[in-house]
Image (cartoon, rainbow, N blue to C red; front, side, top):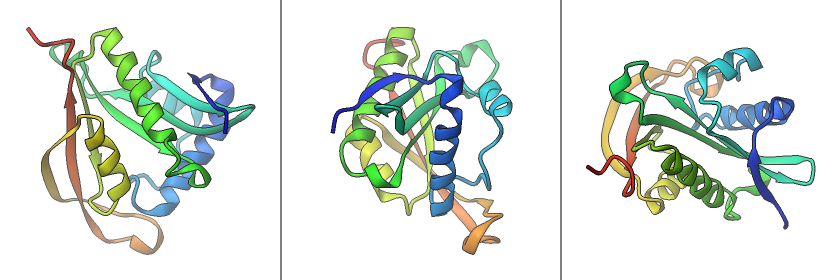
Length: 170
């Protein structure tokens, strides 16, 4: 398989949204019940840290960062989202994409990436740990699912973070 990692463009949104919805459908990716429209998603994610994996005209995966706070002291901290379409999971695409997003953040001076992962999402936990993320805690019953066969179920979230070895080390 030949693929390339590229910047996400607005015209990629329908395919990106489809992959996001596929992840939502698993019940183990997010508390969100549906992917938002482009304008809402666009306003919540950092412009310079949105990547996709392309195979020809097909998007196989995407990653994007959201700021964790508007406070200047947290300017180097971002929350990671990364989704791979089901047909291409387990093929190294997520690892390649995660490496690329880490590279983009270190070039830009971000010092911490963080995320929240359901404990049941073992492949995602394994992926981030292989890329230097540490488990820093567990938020118990932090939210209740609102959709699917898990609607009404309280869920725990494992907090993970990766501190850069090249920026923010002073």
